[in-house]
Length: 531
Image 1 (tube, rainbow, N blue to C red):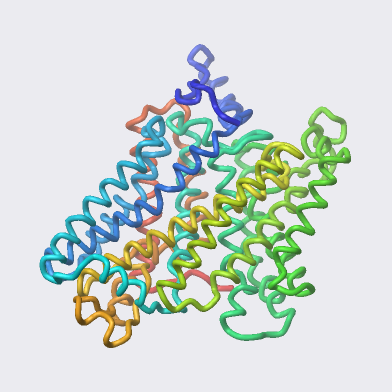
Image 2 (image 1 turned 120 degrees about the vertical axis):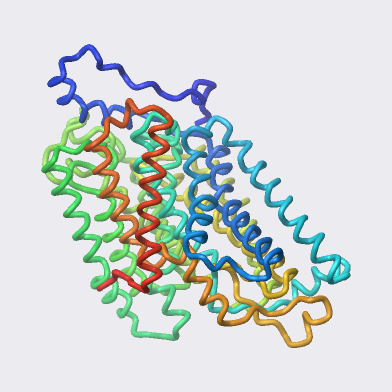
């Protein structure tokens, strides 16, 4: 799956300047479909490098806020400045990294890490002169710090960033500045957008009713299923709306992703319903076994029967789309793989919600995540050696192992970034960072060295100035707006012939407008969730 040296050059669109204008307009749909088809993905190492960027952006934003407080004695109070800072630090670097800066993607994490280290060094040098405490003593006090066990910022940030990265990619992929290796692979391969689909499933499972019930006590076994039946109807409605709109305006679509009539909204809805049904029958704490019971037999069927040939080539072996099952075979059969990912992610969510009220406890959890991140890639290589390469199209066992491995890696990165921000906050008395852990320290733990608990009301105030909190409150609306605006841009603009400067302007405007709408809704405490 390693790409050769040609992967560093952007794919040039096929010139159509010689066609008559009418014929050129007629061929736009085919050109855009060809532009996102027959691709092979990128390397696992490059995806890992890309996944390190969101936690580094989060860390950078938090350190800048702490440094501002250290110099001015107060947090950023302007909502305008807060929005601009969040967008420029949390969103814009990701947009550049997957477009014009993609050829140097491996260097960007090092640059961001060096920048963060410089900011931390400046903060520590100033606070050390005031506190006069040895570094070892500060670390001991940090490990003793008590955290709010009800708050796990890494889960919120993970879900928001998956949404942001997906929103960037679904429009950026239609521009030539977005490398073709990042787009969805046709059959086998690991594209960045292939990971995004699985990560979306993973993020939904982390906060599903089965996971949340554990935190709020025991409830009737089938209550989660009833809640899911009621909560998935917006997804079914959105799936139907997307289907009707795409077909009515002849919008370009990649049929081999899900099929003729299927789309991701339908997949997510059915996966959630099926998982709730299974977890109503089997114990929730054995969700990982249920996941294996789904994924392994499905992989055996792919490897030992003609099922894989049917999914890839249709009933006649030449890509037929006859009948509902044949027309939507990719979307229907990939449900088994996505269901396995969802069930395994429920197990991760239950583990994360175990009561940990200290930094020491979360350092242990971070070690558990690190162990999983080491073991799962080994299992992935074994799966590929014994079966077949990663395939999002059929959602095979290697795909499930890959998605879980990199989702846990990204989650671990966010936990590590949160702990680093927490340590820095405790150095600067009175400082706070939105969407970061709340600290409840024992009365005698931090007074000697200037380390104190954060005021309870400060987090609530700061959350009003946080883009992450704003998107988190209306995640489905954010994703829906991204889809609608992506469609509008593609209808109005010839994306595949756009220059780099124009493409960057369009992508920044598109993301900023979506973020601004979420920010305004959050500032007015409006949550558009009526189910």
